[in-house]
Amino acid sequence: GGYRRYRMHQGEEALRNCLPHGLRRPLFGALGQMYPKADWAPRPLRAKTTLQALAMDSVQAYHHSMSHLLADQRKALFSAAFQRSLGGYSSLNVFRQYALQTEIEDPLALIQYLDYKTWLVGDINTKVDRASMAHSLEVREPLMDHQLVEWLATLPSDLKIRGGEGKYVLKKAFEPLLPREVLYRPKMGFSVPLASWLRGPLAQRLKESVLSPRMLASGYFNAGTLKTLVHQHLGAHHDHSTALWMLIMFDAFLRQAMEPVRTVVPAARTEWVTP
Image 1: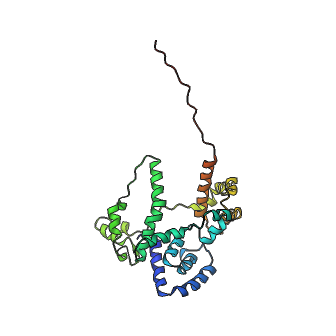
Image 2: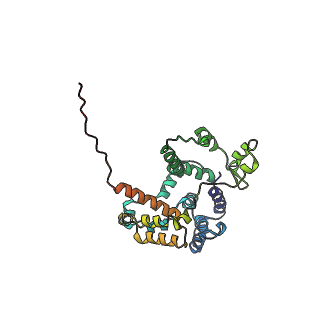
Image 3: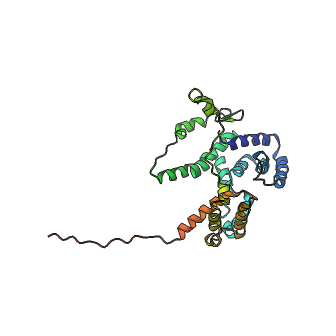
């Protein structure tokens, strides 16, 4: 229970349980629509996503908080032809299907289960595995031992988060072994200053990749939206760094896929003559 979004979701869920959906949807939906997207503001003032999530049910709200691009942004980004080719596919429906396959009722346990089924296997575990194997390293995560994970899944939520403190049971278990200042220091992730990089040393790469002829001619995107994302980010009007980084990576994939495959011509066969 160490991620901040888990604590945020618990707080939102408590409020969702206090108000009927028929009241929450129009009230918070309108507030979320009116509240400005203030990427530049201190975190407590960036409430747009929270207000929008309060208008939704639990699964939709968690999907909303995990999405790098919100529904209206995806609609604007992808071309009409590409959206038709998806045949109605929705990543939200993937979340809903997983939620329907389990009988978990606890809100925290449910979103952690959704993470197991989507984010862990499709994102961070995959990236660690590929990056480590590319350098001939075998990485093992001791806290992901399957027996430990299965046991942790049976714990009540108040042993995962208590009094706003995440990883409660883990920290209590290690109190005799580790200094308090280590156990209870603020969570330190692996984030990089992507937003400033894309406005500084990577600004040219950003424009060359996201606005490349490959991307504009791919048929997947609306060219106008690509240009808007780039210009808004470079002008520091919005922080689109995560979405833009994904687009840069997609352009790299297109470039690799479209370039001719280089082959090595085998050397001429040498005949060995026995004297």
